Amino acid sequence: DAALVSVPRQGELWVRYQTHSEEPLVLRCRAKLAKSTAFDFVLERPVTGRWVSLRVPLERFRSFAGEPLSEGTPLHIFYVYCKTSNSRHSIDDLAVVSRE
Image (cartoon, rainbow, N blue to C red; front, top):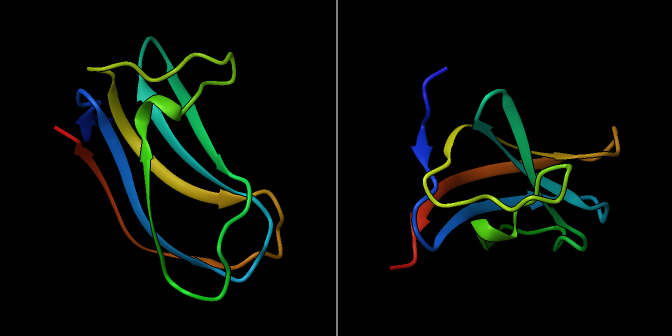
């Protein structure tokens, strides 16, 4: 599993999504550290019924231990999910960009 990208200085995750559920969406990236570590951002109140573009600063992603993502961390997997099994959502675009 090679890294797709390293966390840039002042990086953001850009995602374009559509959902039909009011349940929180979890944006997750996995970092290639000593072991694969998940970092999450939870969108508590997603907009429903239409396509939405969202920009999330990567420093807002947290590991299960509460640690933030840091510059230079190699990332190798990205995905979006909802904890409710009956939710439907679509992802049209996902990118890591630098705000600089």
